[in-house]
Figure 1 (cartoon, rainbow, N blue to C red):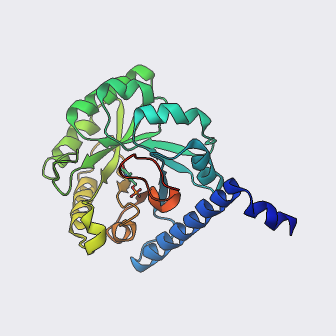
Figure 2: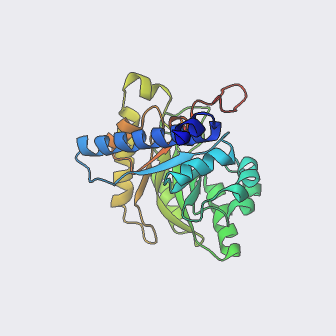
Length: 253
Ligand SMILES: *Cc1c(COP(=O)(O)O)cnc(C)c1O
């Protein structure tokens, strides 16, 4: 009884419980989508996307066993990452990366998912070499050919992959995309199908030095569809932490 009263009057315990509940539901939905697609249980990894989310709420997700965080913005990440209790977790960078910010993150992330140009790839490779490491990377594909989004054009990404896989500071692991927002609403999975084909062709290239094992696609609104199309890693923000305020970028609850 005492326990219940304490929980009801402690907002941070409520938030912890809410975030835990959302994570359990998303894991459940991932498992169902894997099963429906005839894929092995556990073949899809869950990333918690932390943009606009305070470090204490990120730590609540980590306490629920989330082992992968996604960071979009270098400045925001640098301001938060020392507060993360993430000894057992990995952090991937997933946002647009300017070359002059690479050195700020190169030692703090275990993968850059958002390589969107040869120019950026070269800069990451040389920064990684200087830091004495090889950075796992994904190539971002602008699969919906949207002007507002960065990424390789679908018809150019496989040639780029050949060049990038040969760069000494990069270990190429696969592809990433942010599908057009409408996909989740209309159920049109053509962009995810196109990504699946590209990923298959990338695997078939058997590029030396590459280890193609990751197709990062699917977010809160469309991750089940992405899993049916072969995604191996889904990036979920609002589904775990609640809606973001579009105008301010701040979380609403
Ligand atoms: C914000 C973001 C996500 C998560 O989007 P939600 O709709 O909050 O799940 C995933 N990937 C990238 C690259 C993002 O910027």
